[in-house]
Image (tube, rainbow, N blue to C red; front, side, top):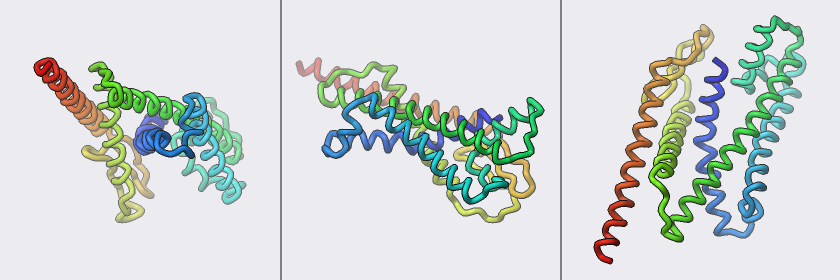
Length: 236
């Protein structure tokens, strides 16, 4: 189950990071101060990946100072990583009795994965921006499958941003069930009563809506490009 928590975290955080990364790539063509970041692909990927790693370690250390030695409150920050550590330790029947050690293991796991995810998102942003800029500047055609891929990314980001905004709505109470997810509820928080978990029908429904929207956007994009090419052939 913790894998699904990780995937949802990547989707929701990536939907915010990808547009920001694309904005940084665009900014590097306008302002010299950003070119140290956007001028080299390897440096771009490593620095943004390092940012994710350092961010997790920094926040984790602040929580360590605040909650040590119990660390109970700090586990909320770990999210999927805390669930993963508890799941593995329980499966192996390992019970250290020292929660701080489990927190450090979860923090290390979260930092490594967050850094790797940010590296992957940075590489995707570099690729997407390169394709769009190449087509805009040299009129080279992006192949149809690449347009579908970019459209699917746009669809996932749009739904991710919408769900992030939906999650930030104020809670009506602290001890009642709270459904999360649009257009379909895919996660339910249980409050003090527990029963938190994913709703599979909502997960499947939201996934299908994202795929359909991405397909529609890709189809429209390809038809517009084909119409543009046909008009050039006709006038030529």
